Image (cartoon, rainbow, N blue to C red; front, side, top):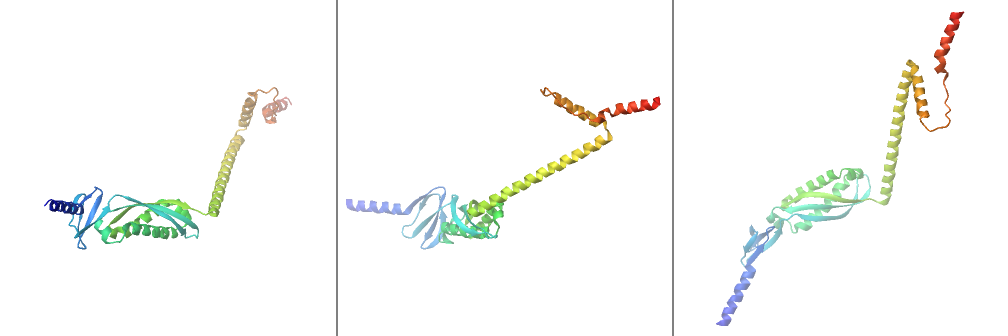
Length: 255
């Protein structure tokens, strides 16, 4: 009798161990009964019928998947390596189990092929300058392709673009030449503006000759402010022109 009771207790424990499952808050269980899906349960305590029922767990948290570097030839025939990261989560546990054999592996392979396809359709400058556009395009394609699997792709980010050494040197030379061009254009614009100002000043001085004398005296004041023992400063004859004219008028009046 004692051994019978022990046997019954052992059978009950084994039954409970195979029948009871506990799922966390972020988990769901897809229940198969005799090969057919009957429900998606969780979280909490789940009771299964041993032998008849089988449960497959699905994680509903956001999954971060790294896309390994892919060899890509851009539209302008530049060979580069591009890697990315994909953020997605399972929205429908049943579809993620029954619509695809392994949704993690399938999403990874789809991300790799999509990355090569999208980057191969654009030029290198567009990949470097418009990364947000490339990310958005990748996200749309992956989200549309994985929707039948019950998966929502929220974000795709291109992490690193590996350029050949020859291309890096060529781009550095291009950037240097562009900066030199901008410097020359800015210098030429400055010279042009200075020439315009000088021309305007010349017109003003031509209309008012006394302005040249005032400018001359101002320059003399600036030089005199320095601690110089000797200052040699040429005096233009125009300064004495009013006195010469006055003397000539007096001479004519005397005659």
